[in-house]
Image (cartoon, rainbow, N blue to C red; front, side):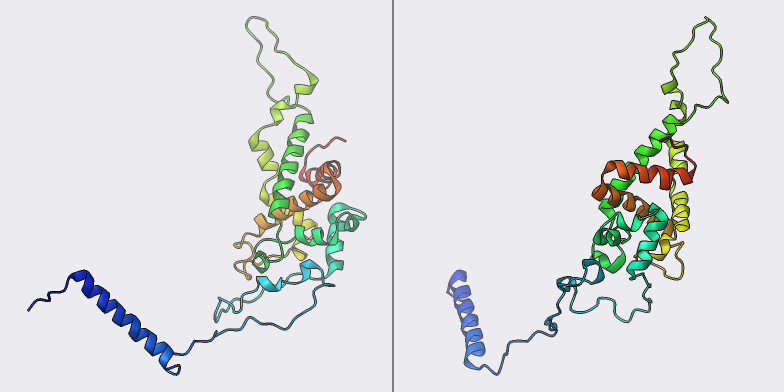
Length: 259
């Protein structure tokens, strides 16, 4: 026999019964359902970081309570942590007193790739973005100021007209994207970085520690070269950054740099 109660009334009665049952089971008997405690504790022993430089440690609040890489067989890639080794690199790249050109924090930041420590200690992407603009501009100016090529002289005009010439325009034929990209390619910048022994101070976490070439070390080295220029521009201004770019990067790459 079908129920004579309306559907809405039946639902109200059933829901009320469910709520009363849940209330009695949770409040009436505390032993039936107990509150589950946290399985992991995030409380750590307090450590004083006041005297430690920012580059030397991972911020405590940036650490997860446990690692997401369970039973990983990937070995840790060793990176430099000695300030003296870093200062020697800056002297090789920036010349005498190159270790005094930047502050300690920026010196470490410029050689830190975003793959290192999952970027929790800062990384050099913004510095590299600024430095690349400076290097590309100085490369364009160096090409324009170089003597023009005379291998392909202009053909004689049938009507005896002579094109306009000016010494300041002689180097425009050198300014082409292919020429500039070839001279400042990542492979050549990486080769120059190897001469400065940047790989000894580079802080990064390669995808394959046993095969740095396939992990993209050329791109990372070129990226870091731009970051050093950006760091110099940030702390010492564009004039010093332009000088460093011309003397320490473009000249070794084969550009004819004028003062």
